[in-house]
Amino acid sequence: MSLLPIALDAATQAGQLIRSNFGSDLTVNEMQCHDIKLELDVRSQKLITEIILANNPTHAILGEEEGDIGGDGEVEWIVDPIDGTVNYYFNIPHFCVSIAARNRQTKEMLLGVIHDPMQNETWSVVQGGPPMLNGKPIAVSTRATMAEAVVTVGFSKSRSALDAGFERYKRIAYDVRKTRMLGSAALALAYIASGRLDAYIEEQISLWDIAAGVMLVEAAGGKVSTSPSVVKPGTMFICASNGKLPIEPYL
Image 1 (cartoon, rainbow, N blue to C red):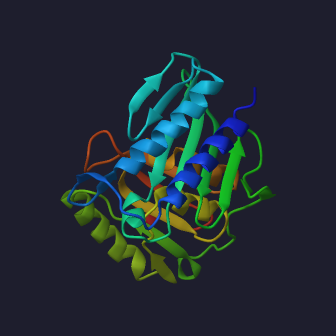
Image 2 (image 1 turned 120 degrees about the vertical axis):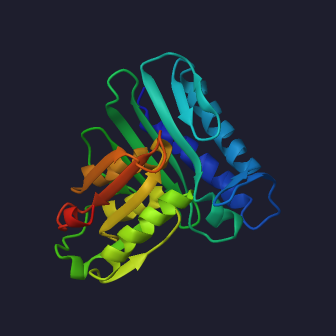
Image 3 (image 1 turned 135 degrees about the horizontal axis):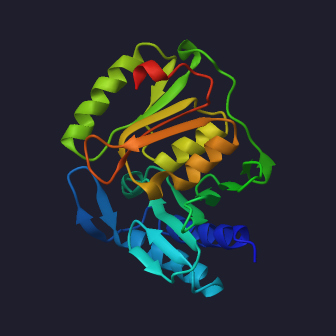
Protein backbone atom coordinates (compact mmCIF):
# COMPACT_ATOMS: atom_id res chain seq x y z
CA MET A 1 0.00 0.00 0.00
CA SER A 2 1.22 3.49 -0.83
CA LEU A 3 2.31 5.45 2.23
CA LEU A 4 1.34 8.87 0.89
CA PRO A 5 -2.45 8.53 1.37
CA ILE A 6 -1.83 7.49 4.97
CA ALA A 7 0.38 10.51 5.60
CA LEU A 8 -2.06 12.90 3.95
CA ASP A 9 -4.98 11.47 5.92
CA ALA A 10 -3.11 11.69 9.22
CA ALA A 11 -1.88 15.24 8.56
CA THR A 12 -5.32 16.43 7.48
CA GLN A 13 -7.14 14.90 10.43
CA ALA A 14 -4.57 16.26 12.88
CA GLY A 15 -4.84 19.65 11.18
CA GLN A 16 -8.62 19.63 11.61
CA LEU A 17 -8.15 18.85 15.28
CA ILE A 18 -5.71 21.67 15.98
CA ARG A 19 -7.59 24.18 13.82
CA SER A 20 -10.85 23.43 15.64
CA ASN A 21 -9.12 24.19 18.95
CA PHE A 22 -7.32 27.33 17.75
CA GLY A 23 -8.17 30.30 19.95
CA SER A 24 -9.76 28.15 22.68
CA ASP A 25 -8.62 27.65 26.26
CA LEU A 26 -5.64 25.30 26.11
CA THR A 27 -4.24 22.90 28.69
CA VAL A 28 -0.52 23.49 29.23
CA ASN A 29 1.44 20.38 30.16
CA GLU A 30 4.72 22.21 30.63
CA MET A 31 5.69 25.90 30.49
CA GLN A 32 9.42 26.02 29.76
CA CYS A 33 11.72 29.04 29.56
CA HIS A 34 11.64 29.29 25.76
CA ASP A 35 9.02 26.67 24.87
CA ILE A 36 5.51 25.46 25.68
CA LYS A 37 4.17 21.89 25.74
CA LEU A 38 0.42 21.55 25.22
CA GLU A 39 -1.98 18.72 25.95
CA LEU A 40 -3.14 19.23 22.36
CA ASP A 41 0.33 18.30 21.09
CA VAL A 42 -0.12 14.92 22.75
CA ARG A 43 -3.66 14.51 21.40
CA SER A 44 -2.56 15.36 17.86
CA GLN A 45 0.34 12.91 18.09
CA LYS A 46 -2.00 10.18 19.37
CA LEU A 47 -4.40 10.73 16.47
CA ILE A 48 -1.58 10.52 13.92
CA THR A 49 -0.19 7.40 15.59
CA GLU A 50 -3.58 5.67 15.55
CA ILE A 51 -4.08 6.37 11.84
CA ILE A 52 -0.61 5.12 10.90
CA LEU A 53 -0.71 1.96 13.01
CA ALA A 54 -4.25 1.13 11.91
CA ASN A 55 -2.85 0.80 8.39
CA ASN A 56 0.21 -1.19 9.43
CA PRO A 57 0.92 -2.03 13.09
CA THR A 58 4.48 -3.13 12.26
CA HIS A 59 5.50 0.44 11.43
CA ALA A 60 7.54 2.41 13.96
CA ILE A 61 6.82 6.02 14.90
CA LEU A 62 9.34 8.53 16.19
CA GLY A 63 7.41 11.50 17.52
CA GLU A 64 8.15 14.61 19.53
CA GLU A 65 5.52 13.77 22.12
CA GLU A 66 5.67 9.98 22.49
CA GLY A 67 9.24 9.01 21.65
CA ASP A 68 9.76 5.83 19.63
CA ILE A 69 6.73 3.52 19.60
CA GLY A 70 5.01 1.00 17.32
CA GLY A 71 6.38 -2.13 15.72
CA ASP A 72 9.73 -3.21 14.36
CA GLY A 73 8.90 -3.07 10.65
CA GLU A 74 11.02 -1.49 7.95
CA VAL A 75 9.12 1.83 7.88
CA GLU A 76 9.72 4.50 10.51
CA TRP A 77 7.50 7.58 10.65
CA ILE A 78 8.84 10.88 12.00
CA VAL A 79 6.11 13.11 13.39
CA ASP A 80 5.79 16.63 14.75
CA PRO A 81 2.10 16.97 15.68
CA ILE A 82 2.22 20.78 16.02
CA ASP A 83 5.33 22.50 14.71
CA GLY A 84 5.05 26.05 15.99
CA THR A 85 3.40 25.35 19.34
CA VAL A 86 4.36 28.72 20.82
CA ASN A 87 2.72 30.49 17.87
CA TYR A 88 -0.34 28.31 18.38
CA TYR A 89 -0.55 29.09 22.10
CA PHE A 90 -0.41 32.84 21.46
CA ASN A 91 -3.04 32.65 18.68
CA ILE A 92 -0.55 33.37 15.90
CA PRO A 93 -1.84 31.39 12.89
CA HIS A 94 1.52 30.07 11.69
CA PHE A 95 2.01 26.41 12.56
CA CYS A 96 1.68 23.03 10.89
CA VAL A 97 1.65 19.25 11.12
CA SER A 98 4.83 17.59 9.83
CA ILE A 99 4.98 13.89 8.92
CA ALA A 100 7.82 12.02 7.21
CA ALA A 101 8.62 8.37 6.65
CA ARG A 102 11.94 6.62 6.06
CA ASN A 103 13.42 3.17 5.76
CA ARG A 104 14.26 2.20 9.31
CA GLN A 105 17.49 0.40 8.42
CA THR A 106 18.98 2.56 5.66
CA LYS A 107 17.48 5.89 6.88
CA GLU A 108 16.51 6.58 3.26
CA MET A 109 13.63 9.06 3.15
CA LEU A 110 10.41 7.77 1.60
CA LEU A 111 8.02 10.73 1.86
CA GLY A 112 7.33 14.05 3.51
CA VAL A 113 4.06 15.88 4.18
CA ILE A 114 3.58 19.30 5.78
CA HIS A 115 0.05 20.57 6.36
CA ASP A 116 -0.84 24.13 7.36
CA PRO A 117 -4.47 23.94 8.47
CA MET A 118 -4.95 27.70 8.76
CA GLN A 119 -3.91 28.42 5.17
CA ASN A 120 -5.26 25.10 3.84
CA GLU A 121 -1.86 24.36 2.29
CA THR A 122 -0.41 20.86 2.04
CA TRP A 123 3.09 20.16 0.78
CA SER A 124 3.99 16.61 -0.19
CA VAL A 125 6.82 14.67 -1.78
CA VAL A 126 7.57 11.00 -2.30
CA GLN A 127 10.91 9.43 -3.04
CA GLY A 128 11.86 10.15 -6.64
CA GLY A 129 8.82 12.35 -7.27
CA PRO A 130 8.27 16.10 -7.64
CA PRO A 131 7.51 18.26 -4.61
CA MET A 132 3.92 19.47 -4.59
CA LEU A 133 1.84 22.20 -2.96
CA ASN A 134 -1.87 21.40 -3.04
CA GLY A 135 -1.22 19.04 -5.92
CA LYS A 136 0.84 21.44 -8.06
CA PRO A 137 4.62 21.17 -8.61
CA ILE A 138 6.85 23.68 -6.83
CA ALA A 139 10.49 24.78 -7.08
CA VAL A 140 12.93 26.91 -5.12
CA SER A 141 13.57 30.53 -6.04
CA THR A 142 16.15 31.64 -8.61
CA ARG A 143 17.59 34.44 -6.45
CA ALA A 144 21.36 34.09 -6.45
CA THR A 145 22.73 37.03 -4.46
CA MET A 146 22.44 37.72 -0.74
CA ALA A 147 21.26 41.26 -1.50
CA GLU A 148 18.13 39.78 -3.13
CA ALA A 149 17.46 37.15 -0.50
CA VAL A 150 14.82 36.81 2.18
CA VAL A 151 16.26 34.65 4.96
CA THR A 152 14.62 33.22 8.05
CA VAL A 153 16.65 32.58 11.18
CA GLY A 154 15.37 30.37 13.97
CA PHE A 155 16.21 31.21 17.56
CA SER A 156 16.42 28.14 19.69
CA LYS A 157 15.56 27.09 23.21
CA SER A 158 18.75 27.58 25.22
CA ARG A 159 20.94 30.54 26.15
CA SER A 160 23.95 29.15 24.29
CA ALA A 161 21.86 28.55 21.17
CA LEU A 162 20.44 32.07 21.37
CA ASP A 163 23.90 33.60 21.74
CA ALA A 164 25.22 31.65 18.75
CA GLY A 165 22.13 32.56 16.75
CA PHE A 166 22.49 36.27 17.53
CA GLU A 167 26.05 36.31 16.23
CA ARG A 168 25.13 34.50 13.02
CA TYR A 169 22.03 36.66 12.53
CA LYS A 170 24.12 39.82 12.82
CA ARG A 171 26.45 38.64 10.05
CA ILE A 172 23.56 37.73 7.75
CA ALA A 173 21.14 40.60 8.39
CA TYR A 174 23.41 43.33 7.02
CA ASP A 175 23.77 41.58 3.67
CA VAL A 176 20.28 40.35 2.77
CA ARG A 177 17.16 42.13 1.57
CA LYS A 178 15.09 41.05 4.58
CA THR A 179 15.15 38.65 7.50
CA ARG A 180 12.13 36.95 9.03
CA MET A 181 11.59 35.03 12.27
CA LEU A 182 8.46 32.95 11.80
CA GLY A 183 8.48 30.25 14.49
CA SER A 184 8.00 27.02 12.53
CA ALA A 185 10.98 25.11 11.15
CA ALA A 186 8.83 22.86 8.99
CA LEU A 187 7.05 25.79 7.35
CA ALA A 188 10.37 27.60 6.85
CA LEU A 189 11.57 24.64 4.80
CA ALA A 190 8.26 24.35 2.95
CA TYR A 191 8.50 28.05 2.08
CA ILE A 192 12.02 27.58 0.69
CA ALA A 193 10.77 24.67 -1.42
CA SER A 194 7.99 26.95 -2.71
CA GLY A 195 10.32 29.87 -3.53
CA ARG A 196 8.86 32.16 -0.86
CA LEU A 197 12.03 32.20 1.23
CA ASP A 198 15.60 31.73 0.10
CA ALA A 199 17.38 30.33 3.16
CA TYR A 200 16.83 29.14 6.74
CA ILE A 201 19.38 28.72 9.53
CA GLU A 202 18.97 27.46 13.09
CA GLU A 203 21.51 26.44 15.70
CA GLN A 204 19.53 23.73 17.50
CA ILE A 205 16.80 21.66 15.88
CA SER A 206 15.38 18.13 16.17
CA LEU A 207 14.76 15.55 13.48
CA TRP A 208 10.95 15.69 13.72
CA ASP A 209 11.05 19.46 13.07
CA ILE A 210 12.80 19.12 9.73
CA ALA A 211 12.50 15.58 8.30
CA ALA A 212 9.63 16.29 5.90
CA GLY A 213 10.89 19.76 5.03
CA VAL A 214 14.41 18.68 4.16
CA MET A 215 13.02 16.20 1.64
CA LEU A 216 10.84 18.92 0.11
CA VAL A 217 13.70 21.41 -0.24
CA GLU A 218 16.04 18.91 -1.86
CA ALA A 219 13.36 17.66 -4.26
CA ALA A 220 12.57 21.28 -5.20
CA GLY A 221 16.18 21.95 -6.21
CA GLY A 222 17.49 23.37 -2.98
CA LYS A 223 20.32 22.38 -0.69
CA VAL A 224 20.29 21.37 2.97
CA SER A 225 23.22 20.80 5.27
CA THR A 226 22.97 19.52 8.84
CA SER A 227 25.61 18.82 11.45
CA PRO A 228 25.62 18.00 15.15
CA SER A 229 24.68 21.09 17.15
CA VAL A 230 27.55 22.62 19.09
CA VAL A 231 25.12 24.03 21.66
CA LYS A 232 23.05 20.95 22.58
CA PRO A 233 24.05 17.31 22.15
CA GLY A 234 21.48 15.18 20.33
CA THR A 235 20.19 18.06 18.21
CA MET A 236 21.32 19.49 14.88
CA PHE A 237 22.45 22.70 13.26
CA ILE A 238 20.68 23.27 9.94
CA CYS A 239 21.23 25.50 6.95
CA ALA A 240 18.79 25.19 4.05
CA SER A 241 18.78 27.33 0.93
CA ASN A 242 17.66 27.47 -2.66
CA GLY A 243 21.10 26.12 -3.60
CA LYS A 244 22.00 29.29 -5.49
CA LEU A 245 22.89 31.72 -2.68
CA PRO A 246 26.53 32.03 -1.55
CA ILE A 247 25.53 31.13 2.01
CA GLU A 248 28.70 29.24 3.04
CA PRO A 249 30.64 32.27 4.40
CA TYR A 250 27.91 32.77 7.01
CA LEU A 251 28.09 29.22 8.39
